[in-house]
Amino acid sequence: MNLIFIPSKLDVIISFLAMLMFLIVPCNSMAASVDNALNAASSTRDQGEIFPRYKVIEPNIAFWKKIYSQYTLSQSVIHDKSNLDIIYDVLTFDNSNTEQARKKRRKMEKAACRKYSRILRLLASGKKPVTPDEKRVAALFGKSADRKVLRRAAKNVRCQRGQKDRFLEGVKRSGAYIHAMREIFRSYGLPEDLCYLPHVESSFRHWARSKCGAAGMWQFMRGTARRFIRVDHLIDERLDPFVSTRAAAELLLDNYEKLGSWPLAITAYNHGAAGMERALREKGSFEKIIREYRGRRFKFASKNFYAEFLAAKYVAEQYMKDNNLEFHPPVEGVTVKVPAYVAFLDLAHLTGVAPCELKALNPALGRSIINGKFYIPAGYKIRLPVLDSSDLALAMAANTLDDGEKILYASQKRPRRYRVRRGDTARKIAARHGVSLKSLAALNGLDRRFTIYAGQYLHLPN
View 1: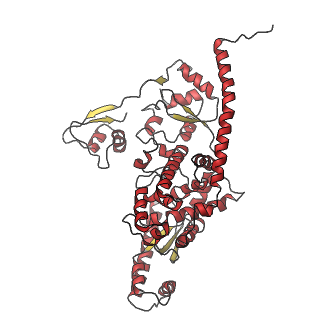
View 2: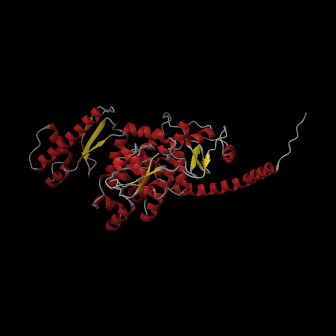
């Protein structure tokens, strides 16, 4: 028996929409192709013009090339922090990840810095070098070394740990993101080679966190990140490599528009645009800033940031020419906007994606969402493996799991509340209710001192 299919009105509408999309998409693709071609053309200008190498930073670039490609995490370089041509010693130590090994390394580094500071003070006092180390240090400065220069050098002894093995791992890891990052920068009309900056910031570790509170591949501080992306107790988009890259593109573009050159804009990524504008007003050029500027916060890290970028760019490009290097495969997926509040595990069940994979694809989701204390917010864009998004849309429209249980909600779960009494502290409240002080502070936006006051209502993590 031959079955005849008679389309319903809904089928006709869906077919019509599909045809319309077929007609629209090529036009959009063509426009996007034209835009991309123009952006690509503008970004293929002479790299020397875009990222100039000034003579004043050549020693710094050479130094950071060695740090990224020659010295490993098992080595520390003792050097002069103002003149990076001067290297006093290279220490080698046990790099095992134990507290004992770390303490021993720090002890060796401090002892070496004290040793060379002492030698420099001795030479500055006018005494002739006697030991092999003293003679070697004296030779670094030449026979006509000024005593004032030596005294200043005694205060500038610094230790820098090697990064070769970490940098190489970062190059491999970058394979998962760098093509998408290039597209993002191209879409903003920015130089694509800005995608090498995470080598300096995080070695392409999207989970990286610093002692000062910076987080993610681009090491955004909370305040700066909130200008561009969502950062709160539920979601921290600094940890999403794609979303944070778009934020970095916006910040770098803003820096460039304010400062007018990439050396200044990139330095401002570390030092802040306002600080670099102040330095530029005072000194007039990037070269003079590096040579002469003595801003209160313009220290070693800011002064070297652009040189580090150029060194990282060079070393990464050399590694990427190695056909034997095993790069991480590009992260593939689609983003789907969640139409309403939904539990993380329900979404995993609905999409057929393992919870661990769903979590890996969406690193911005906070622990309180992963463990079910809160829902994924309505409107949030979830990254999923490549799948038929229309199937997902239909499943969500049905608003049920296989067993008929509702999965979409109109509002977020409400946290418990506590009214602060006289004599309470945030630490005491957290302990009394069995929650962490950190989660209590994040949920309520408390400052670093966890300041609270009597009569205030605090939300308690579920």
